[in-house]
Image 1: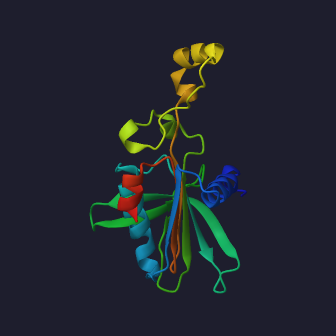
Image 2: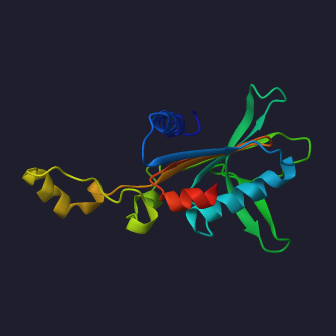
Image 3: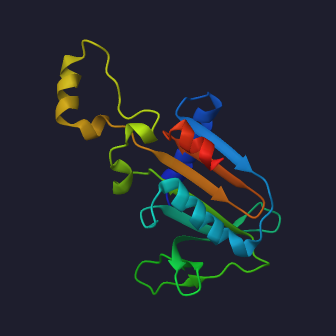
Length: 190
């Protein structure tokens, strides 16, 4: 919560809305075990597939170490995941402001957790959503709403629907909440 105050709110909103259910929200979870050393690579590949982009710079990615009991999160850091062309692996760097970037390695005995979010007001999430990629592309108005229709015609970006997601990756599970992703994309991601 201290690292990004909007993250717990987005998580609560997506999880509660999924329980309603809401037609634009999907969730899936996998509980297969993974090696700690492969989590950053898995997270990187999954996010690139989900976003359809090579760069993950505009995503919020937090890496923390879970305690052995899983009840406490230690040393959370906002990080970047970057592809290392030299040895074809993913490198994890802390995003500490004003300091040199720390390279973080996931060791075999670690219990890393990656929490990734998109759609918390960053500029990239405000780009118009294509009809083919979303459940809803814009907010619809009821007939007779002439004043709002005038505003909508002059400020289409205010009435456009965005996409959002939260991805949580640990050694024992992967959980994904998606908002406004087309069902075809959700099916492919599962």
